[in-house]
Image (cartoon, rainbow, N blue to C red; front, side):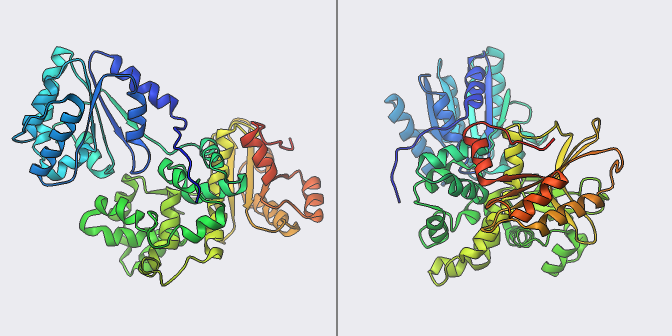
Length: 466
């Protein structure tokens, strides 16, 4: 592995939002987002040059947590008061004038002193009347943050002036980050397909030599990625974590319809919705329906690339990987890269403005006979339809793939005699001569790895056959 200094990427809009918020007379800014997404780093970047105090709420017994907060205060101010309880701590920091207060991982208070939220409400309301509050808080436990700030029964409901949900880094910035570490473009986009745009992951992964190096080491003893799914998610589910994990494992393997999920778990299908709703509420899964299809044709997918990868490859054999008695099979990871590349290409089309027309909706299509396409988008007003396949494998696309795409387009029932079609295929290794001939005669656009690289690195939108 290589070792390079850490660099801060992107997030300009988020930094501007934070700085604009704390310039106002009264600010209570709440920042949410999953672990490793860079909330603390973002806030620290935004607060550079601004007089502030930072406090991390540790998940410890109250006395130890208060002692740690006292130590943090001494490091930053030179004073080390003894706090009786969290109300006493809050009273102290809320009396400090002219400083922005940043409380990191406020969701941990839910485990230490639930009454602290009522105390905080009382003090925030008082400060609001005096226009003296400049408070920023963040938290990584999505379910707890939703309860604290979105539940009408909770004391802090409606008290925040701004709420920022931090998203993963976009595709283009993620690719730049990985390539800055020395990975090739091909290795970078394949790494993104497995791990998404989580800054902490990308920071670690860019130190590897290539994608094969990543595959060989990602789920080995001592790797942070091996226990990552457990570390991030078990706290969200409490005592029912094993059922939620089992559902995510089944979905990751492609058994994504409600009936098939229930069958795999040996569960009555009517018991499933409450678990699916929890997973949807945490934005871990998304319900998909085929565009132009029937509403009852439902599938679920894991919405986070890393969790898809972790539950598909790691979780089923985590004990063996943890003991070093098994190694990840490269062909399984390669297959996961291939399936993940579909969502990568949708990201690409959006971020590089490479659609051949402005779409109303982007998704996919399938029918009960097993026919499906990877990407579908359309414009209702213009009656334009884009339908494409993504083939990310180490061989050229042949005529059979082109014919299958064209046959599936014929099966899509939407303005059949009036629409203008934009069929396309994205292929890592390009196309055979026969495929290129068929594509030319049928108006099928073909894009290769080189086209994708020019699009991302040189800001050249894809060149469609119009």
